[in-house]
Length: 197
Image (cartoon, rainbow, N blue to C red; front, side, top):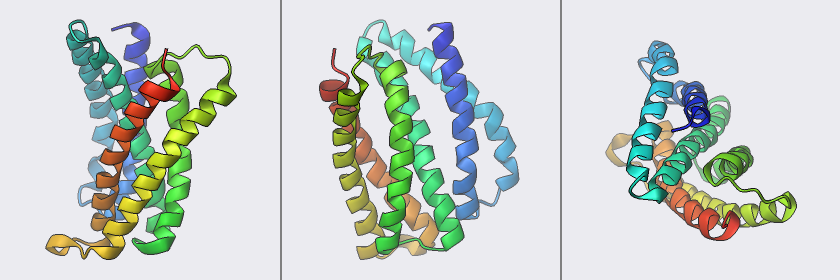
């Protein structure tokens, strides 16, 4: 693992720790005061995870790249969740069409961030024509966003919360499910269509 990869994994871990705060605030996380510990632990875990993936990547090269994609994905996911939870916390809207509308802002923030991290770090694209590449990136991401929003809207609007979850928890469960599907779609699209070498 290069020094650059180590530094980036530490930065991503730190950003993720900060982005957890609006999610914890919205969920009424009972141990909110422990949030400071995440600022220390998450950067270390991110670096250890990337280091282990690079060891495995010596035998299976795509593992190292997928680990970088995973770290960037965690950052983008927390940016996505953080923006959505921040808006939900202040508006007290946790389901329906307004939530899908708020998801647009979360999507845009996370995807602009995703483009630059994935272009320069995960896939190491040297493509100079950013406009064409960014249009392909947005196309793949837009399809992922539609999938993400449909799952988020469907689960929060059409399915009654299981096990008496609060609306805030149910919103985040739906968002997590939508994000897993979205991440699988995006990795394939970015690797095979956007940043292919």
